[in-house]
Structure formats: C-alpha cells, structure tokens
Length: 183
Image (tube, rainbow, N blue to C red):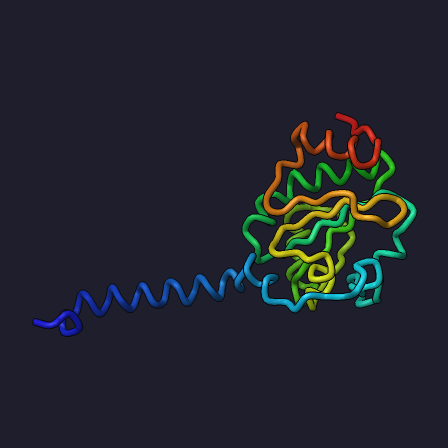
C-alpha cells in the first residue's frame, strides 16, 4: 500500500502542516519579522511613533534624560517572558533619573492595553505600528533594547531576552549613564 493511501499517514501529515501553519501565524514571524523591513536612512531620533491616543512622537522630544528604549510586542514570547523583570527595572531606572520608553510593535493599542492591565504594568503605551523606528535602529528582532544618553546618542543595546533583575543590568546603567539603581 502506498504512503498516501494509509489513513494514519494522512492524518499525521495533516497535523504537521496545520501545526507549522498555526505556528507561523501565532508568532507573526515574531523575531524574523523585523529582518524584512527595508534599511532606513532616517535618524532614529526623527522617526515617528505614537502614544495610546495616536499622537505622533519622536525620540528627540525625550532628549535631555538618559533613555532606555525597549522594542517589544505582545506576540513575541521572549518579550512577554521578560516583561516582569523589565517593569521592575524601569521603576528603579526612573527613580534614579532616567526614562523608559516601552515601544510595542503591535499594530493596535488594544492588545497592549489589555496586556498591561492583566499584569498591572504602569508603562505609558507607545506603538511603532509600522516597524520604522526598529528599522531605523537596524533592529533585527525582538526584544531589542537601546540605551540612549541625555544628548540623544546611542551608547549601547541588548538584543533578545535579558534578566533585568540581574547585577549586569545595574552595571550597564552605571557604565552607560553613571546612575546607581536602588535595590
């Protein structure tokens, strides 16, 4: 009997195809998605992103304070897994005089608002709906975190998941900004 005439083989093949199709949709090509944006020639400080009310902003409007810009998305498993430690880090960093911009790559504000409410996060909601800001930073996946000094210059970055509760996070803040985080 041929391979395709056996009922079990057809069922297993169907499940494998459905699994990979579902995985591709669920991840929305998660960390690969950013790799397909065209290279930007724009300065990241001038690329617009929006707040929860769809008001256009740029990074230049936040110049003057040390910034930690976290690019993430609700559909990115690594981003979601590390968001709790990033939220605790953000509270300490802002208490030390810095500012955190947690910029979602989601296309709509609804999933971000619901995610923040479920987890009692207090970040202001910012969206990079088109991926242009991530592209301007030459980001190749999510999460990507950019450290920007008070003059608006990038001084460091972290790609991928990172333990924001670690001593390494505190050391990076000291190295890049000369700030000490409270325990």
